[in-house]
Image (cartoon, rainbow, N blue to C red; front, side):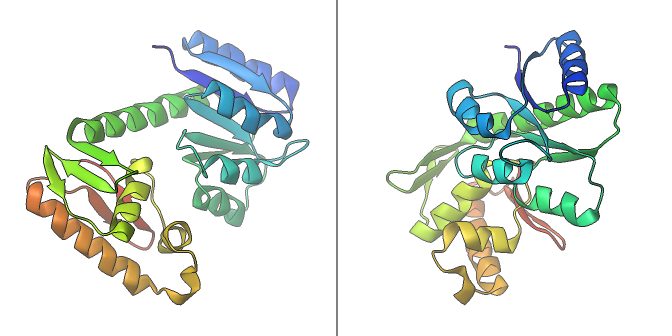
Length: 223
């Protein structure tokens, strides 16, 4: 099935150029130029990937990305003329999958779209082959066997599993699974990760699902 790409860009000429390149690569693509239109569109149309400009009329790209990540793991590639490292890191920290700075080559951007979609589809399929989560009951099954997790451990695994390949920092994990993360230390997160890994290894000894990324955090990936 052809992937659906949403282009969020208020520069009409650039948006149309990207549209042409994506169509040539046999993707479906649509353009939005106002940030206020993005969340309703994503909720109703469920695109497979979003190309998101940072500076937009209405709602800005960073705010849009943060809102999308509350309910969706759709891949997001940010596009911006702002090249400060702090801006790039901010985008990645709140959930962007990739970041390109203007001016960029449309051909290169299409290549990045293909790479992100390929990685996302592959890791999701790998996870679906062996893993079943039941959020209502807090039950995890891997390779047909139950993994006994506490409620907090389940939420931790569910968070990482929801976006395969994405690196979550300890602060992001604390923010998402604790009501008041200010009283939790990095070591607490590390301890929970260690326990979840141990329980998963008991039923799936030949694969590692939760990976440490030095200096950054943790990610889910089947290897």
